[in-house]
Length: 98
Image 1 (cartoon, one colour):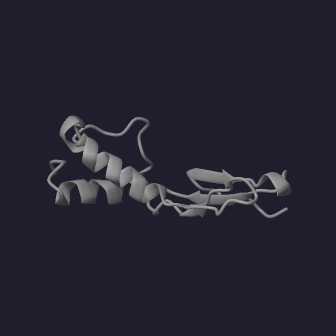
Image 2 (tube, one colour; image 1 turned 60 degrees about the vertical axis):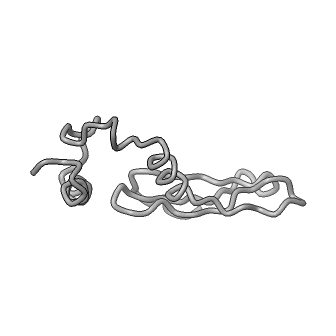
């Protein structure tokens, strides 16, 4: 059993034929969500899931940038080292005042 990395978010993928073993994909808010294969039935081809692209597409199509007040802090608040990147990005895109 490998050491579990300390990350903000995790995705666990477990194939039926190898359970209880699983693959852990860890990432922080400062990183892109990792792509991963999605196990289906053993005879099926596993699609590669790109959650980052899916979330960006949903965000843009739903126009969430019009409904969210980015001048407010996140709930729960981000750690100071995690808040710098989103704050800078939101300011550059004109979604947050300095």
